[in-house]
Image (cartoon, rainbow, N blue to C red; front, top):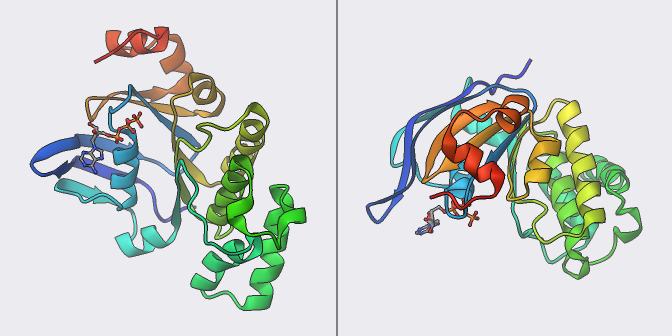
Length: 237
Ligand SMILES: Nc1ncnc2c1ncn2[C@@H]1O[C@H](COP(=O)(O)OP(=O)(O)OP(=O)(O)O)[C@@H](O)[C@H]1O
């Protein structure tokens, strides 16, 4: 039983220089499955993920967890569209978050090896992370996020610009993480990916949650004309 959830956002707004970027958002997330955030360019997907993660300033409203916020932050990770790597080896990139969580070095090294195998990077443990391909870097970023066994991972367009094979491998890792009880909140432009991964969908429009539904319902019978138009591929503003 998770102690983080529900995550409850009430009237949450993030603004910059007086301009509201996202909000007001009312959203409750329980601790299971994959929530996919979709919406037109600039709708606020990245900003919403950052806001919920605590990486964007909460200007107004509240975001609360079932546990103290610090504890919630400690149990979550964020995977960026462009992976941010330490300029060190694959192994050191995997060991780093474990050491930051206080794990002894030998144990951290064993776990790093184990995770490198799980994501197919076992041959590359000693290689500098920056020389990996885009797909390999994203698999490393995922492994580095999941290695601390977080209760929640935010992923912002994790497969943008990756080829089909890398995308398939990454989706397999995400399926496994979700089955193992890690809550995923993922933004994507790729409606195929949204259909493959989503248990629930949040449709954002102009910085607000326009519709939220189980994926089976959202993709077959969206409630609003804007969501229906978006799914048809129309331009929605
Ligand atoms: N640092 C910033 N300063 C000012 N405005 C910003 C900043 N970051 C984002 N915005 C604005 O906030 C709005 C939401 O942007 P965001 O990147 O979250 O949308 P998105 O749905 O992820 O877009 P995309 O699909 O293009 O990635 C946009 O109008 C964007 O121009």
